[in-house]
Length: 347
Image (cartoon, rainbow, N blue to C red; front, side, top):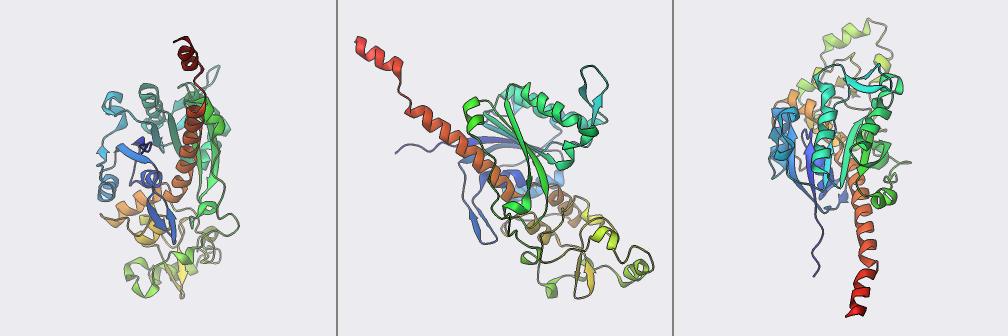
């Protein structure tokens, strides 16, 4: 029996493991099975110990806790696919002719570290993820330079903005995926996944906990609500952040632990009581399965889950990448080996 091809992944900026879980597959979410993909994670890295603690509780591979800038490329094992959601908030465009990417602080350097690993390890594919705002950063000047930097690594690059709610995730979370291929044929064959729930996205009500089981610590105090009622913000609840239960949730952020009754983060109004989401609800909204363990302090959980890539969305992207790689490999194997035929005729 022919051995099944397994593709290895090195994961940078791994966080609590949303990208890695999605890439591996083999889980269920909202009664749908996301099959195990032919993927093996061989390396993961993140600088935040609390995020790594969550990762380690859910994967057999332990996450390296380190600053990528201090990790030599030779310490990262060879791999077929490199993944990572690099920080982007610190990009600037240096006023040179031609213009080049710069950075405003230390976080801005991390994109270049991903490029460093790509140049050194030369994976077959890389999958980078970022917020939609990267497209408009620096008056839309930064993103083309980011793509060019990836292309300069020796890759054919494509990108798309995907809305998580169109792919079975109960959240209107838009993210940009930048994917680079070493092989031109795989690049030509690749197509981003088609939406699966465009017309009927999962809704928030499907993933909320039973209200009778919610701890009082998640509810906002009557005093806070009474104070807000005296302000002009109460009727709109600051841009309508109270969530509709029959629609996907608005985008969750990393600072949910600091959410207030008048913050810009999503909150709930159920049975005339205002409350924040529980960590398990945040995990569900992000499409983590029930089996995903959530160890650690509430603040750390909110931060890690809010920063995560929805596993279901990552599964769809990875599955499309794998399909293109397998398709091209199969076609190449079917091509007649003319040189070998010529040699046989000469014998």
